[in-house]
Image 1: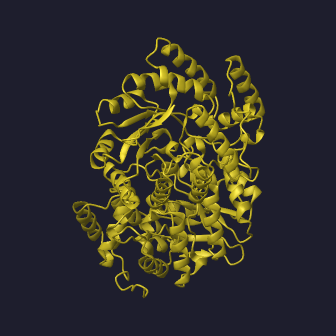
Image 2: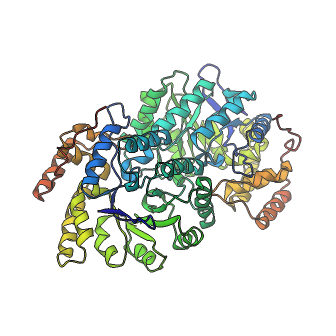
Length: 316
Length: 316
């Protein structure tokens, strides 16, 4: 499950970077996104809309604002939302972050500015500080987003430490998508007060929980939410290791392919709606042969997406 | 000089990714940008506004549109403009490109979508094709922007070949900022019809001209425009090698520092306007000691920015 602490307004639990449905003209389909978000919530998963696996960086700022408004307008609880708002330009990041905060989102997931490479911690600190000042809200809760395999702009422990000390009630957590447990472990060692450390893959969920981490924000939570939530809720039970191994089997099955088209192909198959196959360039849809192999492998593992087929889209 | 061929509407010559002036509040300063563009034009240099060295990726789409409108509104000839319009999202790229085309810009410099890594040529082709279709104008002229040290998304010869063949009157050139002459040379070998190949640094200008290239689009053209233009115009003369060596000395002097703050510090010094020092995070301004060393080294090389001090800002 995903939980927002009522007092400190800090998240814990399992979140999905919610995949974004497109129409034939490549426009985002708000209706199907609402439906998928409702299914995610029904499975106990929080909504990191506009994450990397949401193709968020293939959406314009205007498109993201329209989708946020549509979700909240449809009655999706903003307190369960942690939209990604980090762009290359601090002005764009501030605009999206202010909008999310005004809508009442429980938090935002914030990439560093990621175009320029080899930038200093001083410069990255200034970028985050500037956005916080521009937003100017005590309600703002930022989860930093460390994903160097994609951004090539890592967030160092020293930078995080400086941000946490300067903005202790605003910079409240991080998603570590570096894929390197030693880095997550080093962050867990810092003892930052009530700082919420999420791993970027459920592969590290049990390790993270054992060390006092907050949960995970994982691509695969789009398709395998209930099992990931179950491990989160029962990680202290004896069967936890076995649960972790089962989660890894499913994740590794997706890991053989480009993950976003694979997640969408899977969702299309189990929802009965092939429009889910559509991705925005520069991504390309999964080809039919790979899709058949993926679905067959998933079936062999007894995988399913129960309840998804029964979800009905909101009236247009 | 920079030239737009009247018949084919293709550029050649020397262009600068024009540095962007900011105010104390980090807002772009259109007035000072207009002034710097006028100086560039007076030196014979074309205007690649919104290039990497313009901190373009630290500006929002709205800010870029406002600046384009301000430049053209102030009487800057759009036919001498090749604004950078490539963003992560094809919808944002299409919006900026359509706007530049409507304003009458001679061309646009277009990054590929650069957030997602390891994408296929098929996906990159689809991204460019989609933008071309969305803009839907016969006036559009695209210069591809290959800068893998920053984007980590290279444009392969195969991809360029496919784009040139599919859109022969639209995809008309490239800026190669890979820093690898062998790649530029391989592109020059392709024999694409009237395809304009610009090197991303004047270091390769003489080599490029000797092989039939179109010129260069270079950061240093912001500060050393006349000398670069002179080599472009006289590359067949006996003194060309010596000219190239002199250009390299100046470029290498800047190359010892993070280049954008160094270009701005230099411009601030020679214009007498210290506000040029301001950069947007994640960049940081040049520190005083480095600035003193840079200016001293430039003075020793007899470097100057003649005429810059005399440029007056447009009335507000």
